[in-house]
Image (cartoon, rainbow, N blue to C red; front, side, top):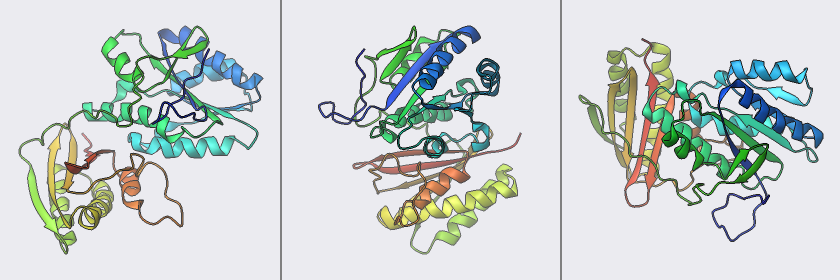
Amino acid sequence: MTEILPSDNPGQAQPPFRHELYPYRGDAQFLSGTLGYIHEALEGGEAVVVAVPSGKASLLRGELADQPAVTFIDTTTLGPNPGRLIGAWVEWMKERGASDRPVRGIGETAWREARSAAHLSELRYHEWLLNRAFARSSAWSMLCPYDDTDGDQSALQALSRCHPLIRQDGHYVRNEGFLTAAEYPFEALDPPCDPFQELSFTHGDLAAIRSKVSQCASDAGLPVDQQRKLAVAVTEIATNSIRYGGGHGTLRTWTQDATFVCEFRDAGYIPDVMAGRVRPTIDQIGGRGLWLAHQLCDLVEIRSTPDQGTVIRLHMQIPR
């Protein structure tokens, strides 16, 4: 079968990062598909990195007899933010791979544990971004199992748009529904939840921004340790707004569904869709603010276009 290569330019050949969606129903189908994928890798001398929910990991461990070429990763240590996953996959694959040893990843997202519609949307966006993150790598491939037991065709269709290949009967086939457009069709952000607080800011207002966020977060019941993390993220994003967004911006804060949200709007544009998702290098100039925000917040939403500017929302979960 022909391998389909994700690319911004379909007419240009790209190294083959293989990104497969594997819909399954029940443990037996999960095992047959993932084990077949793993055994293909082992027969070819490849390493395997497995990041699946703990129950599925136990099923695989029971079938693999401690294969040294297979590494299991606990993704719960990363927290709920999907924006941390690509950077983590980069590190996991580098650790297991070598110049002459390709690596296969198996990554299953716990879709039913999504905390909100915003979280679910960002999980799907992460799946689509994997094609951009690894498009130039011929050494890595990834299988994404998806539990389709409930038969929700709309959910499966939305996810299939993020994968150029689908695994069926032990083989991968071209996915005609894959979204090849260079720009992802973001789902519109919901309006701020009333009542919300608003503050316009410019040069010299960072202290006022931190004070405003601190007071609103405290009133919302956000614990002190989370307030401290949020203060760092807020400072980074507000600084970026002032520096790159026309010298000013607007802050809004509100509470919705046990989540405290800080929204920043400015006139700037972020052209790099991978901004904040891969760890900055030591000698890199800029790019650390969004990375820190992703590491510190439970969810980060970014919407940025040349004509409408940038909206960034920082989410912090409030303990119930």
